[in-house]
Image: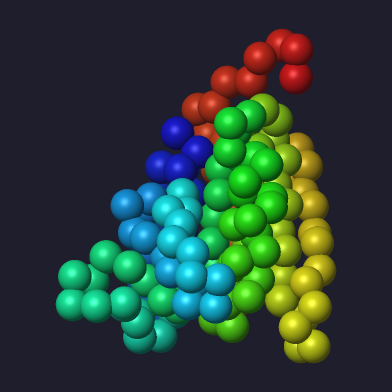
Length: 150
């Protein structure tokens, strides 16, 4: 549900912009770490570059989104995060919790350092500076039911 919500909100925002939006079946390759990943959602602005003629492996993502789960969180915060930060094209890396309305956004700074911003609660909004968009957390989590324990 969260992936569909993010895709819908981004799709509406990007429909007349020079950016493409891809779901989790678009593979991303980092030639520096020689890693391949399948992010939950990926945005590429300007001309997408692909590994080969198959057009199924993206080389220049602008924003990468991962929806955290107990089985993927460690990998999403570890090896994947490190590899994405090595890619010069990546400007923002977004981690979205499934357990509670909470989003972390890492942004590349001018000196290539990364800055963490976090957003909590359904009243908050997620700014995506690299594409000039703002996604309300209430839309990201639309129709998501949280357990009482959370």
